[in-house]
Length: 224
Image (cartoon, rainbow, N blue to C red; front, side, top):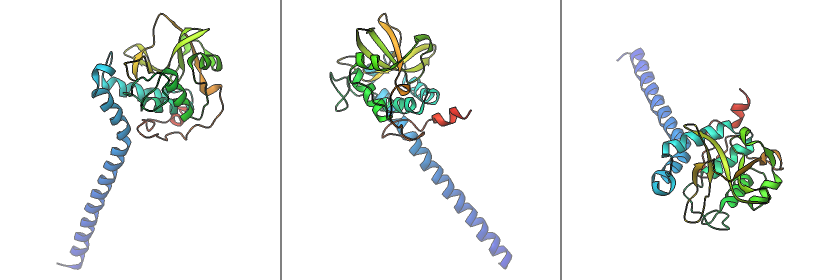
């Protein structure tokens, strides 16, 4: 074999090696990026009776990624990502994480992760937040049920699934963190915590363990 032929063969071999290496690296990155949503999908698909009361696992993934992208602030996007990672955890009266949450425990934990301090119970969260007209509610806003004197439930608004406005919440004893329709006869108000409380959100694109914040970050939306 001539010298030029040997160089050509070595170059071809090196090229093939680089292609294999790049493909493997891309596969590893894809696996890391998809892991959070995969966890949410398994939480929903693995407990369909509790989580798929209205929507499928695919509906969950589509809405969550869209909500993070369309959130009104980095704090709201981070709160959505954190709350989505709790899907499937049980409702626990007074719960703030282990083993589960009640409605206001979930919203407080989500916004605390986002660097925003809000009160512990639903009525106090309503009183502390900047009020938003229900017709103008956006992903990451909090929706309240009851009345201004006593909010008995709070949920995080995510957006619409097939035209149905939808929230993420810890609904009631015996249920789990899941998606539910926004509409109810006692829905009375919405607030936007990220515009009314101090604190520093995690950097756009930062993903909490098991969450899905790798979806198109808020910064990309702001730059459009």
